[in-house]
Length: 218
Length: 211
Image 1: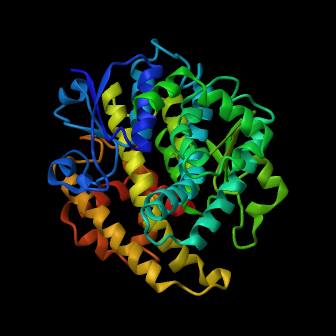
Image 2: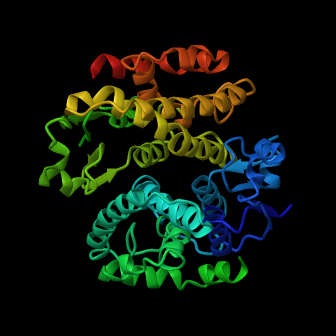
């Protein structure tokens, strides 16, 4: 059974898809339309009771009596570990300490980078672009918060090629989907370009063949 | 050299401390006073540039983000103390899933409630009652999903205690204790049984005794 990924049109599922491509794991996708509220359908909630995207189905979990597996950052950790020796091999680093640093920066992405950029995505791409009233104060506040986080990244990336060290890892990969929204449809590429090392890092990671494939397909 | 954990008075560092106790890893602590703003001191920011708690120092190795730290120690000391990552790669996957659920669904509302109900007045700010009410509703919906899950599974990731359950200890302790919202746990039969089980582990009782 090929891995099935739900919701490829959206950002968090793309976090999973780019990882599967890096690991050379075959997969198929199933569309879920958030605007139509398909994530709140009973059939979807059976798979993901919190109604978030993505969820995946994989025969190895079905063996456990588990129909589905959720949370993009859990999914990428699972596949990076299970398929350690194929595709890009050091997505979790090469030692336990390197993995610790990957985990640290994955958590930084989840707790510092993601909240403000997610607010901006919701306000700018889902509300304003659809002609619904956006909270301009919230956008401004979130942009300031994100800017401060990027300043810390600038410092880190002035000393380290990638976030966890000298190797591309899940920590860098995790930033791809929402940062793509930032430089693209949100029209805030200056936030990246104004920071020399963040800019170089973004060019490096976003030009990986795996990410270019994701943008081509979805 | 013993692991040093910064900020033991607060919740997220306790997530690390209970894990170290479960894994039988020796540690010491260093106080950080959030009210005095010590997490914004240049010396602290050198260790944790986002100014958050905790950070640990283990010899030359510095690591921050509590959920990264517990994953690191659970893996590094796999063969001692309590197994916290499950036994197989799939079991670990389920642990990771429920750790992420805690981080992204459980933590945001309970954190808002903590800041408003336990820290706002200490910082001379007024409590945002609307935010508390909204957060409590969100948390209630998450707990309803937990109730369903725990009606089929003894612990979150399966029939074994793991980092996913452990991660809930510190802020849920605030909820049933100083926030005086124990009813949120007690009104839900399986969540209630799960809370009694995990909060009565010797490791958690030790944390409450020490800090």
